[in-house]
Length: 626
Image 1 (cartoon, rainbow, N blue to C red):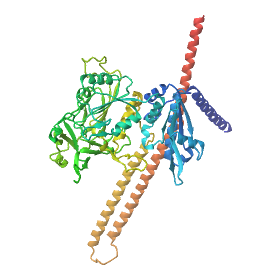
Image 2 (cartoon, rainbow, N blue to C red):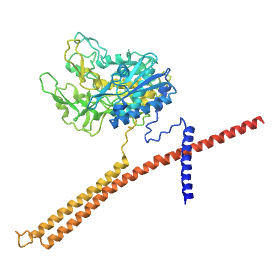
Image 3 (cartoon, rainbow, N blue to C red):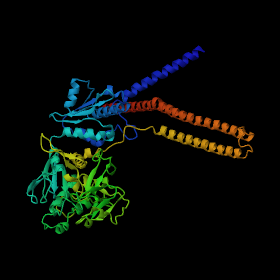
């Protein structure tokens, strides 16, 4: 008996030693090997991000400020913070020394806390005591350039990789991106002949000048310089053939374009038209870019304006008159925006006026992704309905929503062919994929649709206050397109946070059975009460309080049924707990035993393969020498 016990213990000890040995061996053999087994490849670095890191000319320093001690009291923040750190560590590991990561937990009133603020990472108060919590990323390069993500917003978790890749790319730049800007609207300011006064530049344009190197272009252009990163076209009207061919070649080179077309541009001055209301109403204020847009897979009809009963705003046409609902001037909300696109994510209301709509061309080789859409209470109105419009309420006369959501803005990507096959341009198809964001409205750029004057200040000139996110949408689009194709390819990924779907399914199933049992109990209770009432009505002595044998028997039967159903309810609850515990045990076995065993066997297989390969090489070498 003792010998059996000793043999059993010896076998267990041998198995333990073997398991440890295999684990150590697999760790050594598979050192540096990483396999992402998550469903959505959460720990796999996107190819675009890897290209951005590889393209760094000099190393970049990353400083991850993370209040780990404070986060310990908040499980959700702790989990997300750990995932951000692991992602940054994975990125640094794969960068081959081009990214230098430092993880810092700033203590209160410390030098690290001062450096965090200096580098652009802000601390936020958290908890009842208002402790300062840091959760951001700063970066520096060798030329004293610096960028920062002040705070990792958990609600933007799916854009974590994009934000980090964007920051790294900005640190690797040696110059501001160049934006070529061609507009037939007076966006850059200048002299206003109507008022005889200087005209301020549009705020969208002036801010773009602060963020980028803006190069003004004219319709007389015949080529677009290679250093132009983004080409902006605002309300292109009757562009000469040479200009269209130059734009076509820019697109075929893989150029990034931001285009604004419009069926009725309210800010179009209508140059050359007689200065009378009727003559001005007859002026064509639409954009003409059909040939190029069609070649890029976009269909735009300048004869239609989208009306929307749900998003129509109330406007006052003249001073002193009450506001009237205008279904052609729309105040869109977050439900109109594609929250999965980094350009539109996190924005709220966007205001547009007399906008058209976009559709993909059938059979196009490009991918058409809507960014901004109407509600289902929308329909089309001919542009002529807006000529000399005195009462916006009349737009609703005969208006019938189609139930379709019309696209106001879209992202278009992919390879295209030239719009001018017989043109002089050398490229006839895409050398690199096209990246285009196109809007069917130009008025959203105008100040009046999203800005108001702030109260006058004693310390300086009157500032502007935004009451819509039009500017943010345009600057986001410019910022996104100013990046490389690699950056644009890094789109939002799935969330790290995953619900326990199997557990939730078990819970829903059990709740359904519980609800069915409860309904059964209620029905039996109601039926029993009716039976008791019927028995009571049949008694001769209506004032008596003594139950008849039938009533007593019926009540006893009901009590027995109630006990049985309650027992079944307890069994359902017990079964739910048992199912969850069984699932947990299966996962433990899988994670603790099966997965390590698979990797151990894989390591042994790799070791055997390497040994055979080395033996074969040595045999060949010996044979060659002999």
